[in-house]
Amino acid sequence: MEEIFCQGCGAQIQTISPDKPGYTPKSSLGKEDILCKRCFRLKHYNEIQDVSITDDDFLKMVSSIRNANGLVVHLIDIFDVNGSLIKSLPRITGDNPIILVGNKVDLLPKSTNQRKLIQWLRSQAKDAGIKVLDVFLISSKKGHGMEELSGQIEHYRNNKDVFIVGTTNVGKSTFINRLIKQSTGANDVITTSYFPGTTLGFIEIPLDEKTSLVDTPGIVNRQQISHYISEEDMKIVTPKNEIKPKVYQLNSGQTLFFGGLARLDFIKGERQSFICYFSNLLEIHRTKLENADNLYNKHLGDLLTPPNSKTLEILPELTESTFKVAGEKTDIVFPGLGWVSLSGEGATVRAHSPKGVAVTKRNSLI
Ligand code: GDP
Image 1: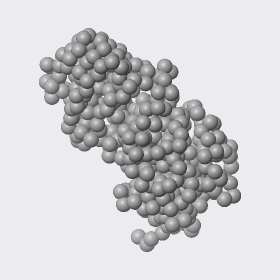
Image 2 (image 1 turned 120 degrees about the horizontal axis):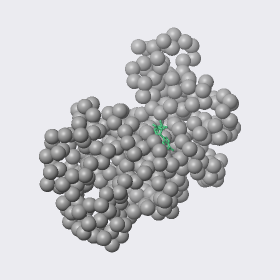
Image 3 (image 1 turned 135 degrees about the vertical axis):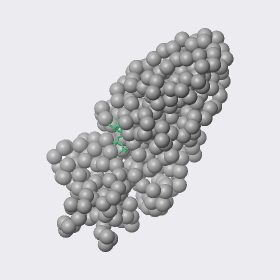
Image 4 (image 1 turned 90 degrees about the horizontal axis):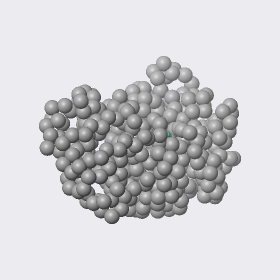
C-alpha cells in the first residue's frame, strides 16, 4: 500500500489494527484528505478514541514531548496504580511539569479516605522517581472532581500546551471527551491538527488561539492485568459500580481465592476479618489452606473462574509473595483486581498473583 498520512494527526494510514494509530477502514481509502478513524470520530462526533503504541513508537513519543513546552497531565487508574503509573515518565516529560490525576474514584467505597489516597499516590509517584506538582482524584465517567481539575490545569499550564499521558484503559478517552464537552458544549465542531514533528497520532484539540490539549497514544504497560486476561474476563474483574466490600472472618490455615486469578493464604495470626474490595462480579471462595492447591489444580477455570478458557491460554502461572502485617491497618493490593484490608492485629499472609503483576502492601485507605 502506498504511504498515506492522516490529515488530522499525521499518523500513517493503515487498515489492519483498529487499536493502533492511523487505522482507517478499507472502504474509506479512496477519499481525498483522508482522516484516520480516530480523527474522523473526533471531527464529526467530538469523541476521542484511544490507540496504543509499540515500544519503538514510545521512544519517538518521548522525544517529541521532551522537546515541547507544556504541562503533562498523567492520568492513572486508582484501581490499578501499579499497572498505570508510567515509571519512565520523567524520561518522557523532560523538564515539563507533571500533575498526577487518579481516575475512577467513583469505584471506591464512600468511606475511602481520599486524603490518604492522595498521599499514597504521591508516595507511589515519588518511589517511581516521578516529581509531581499536584495530585487530583476524579471520575471521568461520573464527572466527580472534573471542574476543579480543569481549573487547576488552566492554572498550572501557564498559557502553554497540555499533554495528556496515560497507559491504555485508564480512561483517557472518557476523560478527554468530558473535557471537550465541558469546554465547548457538545455541538461545537472540534478541529484537529497535526502535532508537528510526529507521526504518532498525537491529536491536538485547541484550547485557545495559540495552545492545545494534546492527546497522546495510550502506553502499553506489561504489568497491567488486562494483558493477561480475555476481554470477557476483564468485564468481570473491572468494577463498574462502587465496590461493596465482602468481609470474611478467617482463622489461620484458611485461604481465599479471587476467582482463580489470585489467592491469599492466612498463614499465621489470631482469627480476624479480611475485608475484600473487588469487583462485585468476581466470586470469592474460602477454603482450607491444606486443600487450596488441590482445589486450584482440579477446578481452575470451572469453579474458580475467571479465568475462562481464553484467559487460560495466556494467563501466566501464579507466583507468591509473603507479607507480615502488624500494628497498622494494611491493604494487600492485587493490581488491577482489588485489595484485601487487614486490621493490623498481626498476621502473616501469602499472596499469589499472575507472574508479572506483583502484589504490594500499603497502609489502608479505609
Ligand atoms: P482509554 O483506553 O484510556 O482511553 O480508556 P477508556 O476511556 O476507553 O476507558 C476504559 C474503561 O474504563 C471503559 O470501560 C470506561 O467506561 C472505564 N472508565 C473510564 N473512566 C472511568 C471512571 O471515571 N470510572 C469508572 N468506573 N470507569 C471509567
